[in-house]
Image (cartoon, rainbow, N blue to C red):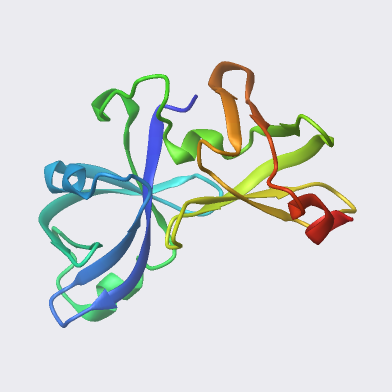
Length: 175
């Protein structure tokens, strides 16, 4: 596990005063109201800078943030497509039945019928249900709903997710 936990992806700038949208990687949006200090990361996971949150606006299932020193649309737009992280020690602790989506990226995925399926390379939260993208060299990617009906067990320490694919899903992508 890393010292930082990715909590969302910054989207488009909004308005003229530096507000920016966030794709949250948590199911409880109210947690974002407590953000004070966070870190801007690039796609490789390198910290670019520390950010101080000065305003959080939650509306219609979307989150909008303002940061100290980011006071124009243009400045906010430069943050787009970067990731927002917090210190893991400051993140809310979860019970064993809940997982930070950032912790499942990189996990190997095994199906009880089809065996090893590949590695989680992405997750999607802006759909009706969370989805994980599972990639394996030479194969089409699988999109698997990250719901208890199909996710049998997540072994965080082992980097392994055991699944039971819905009927027809494997054949749809790789059959």
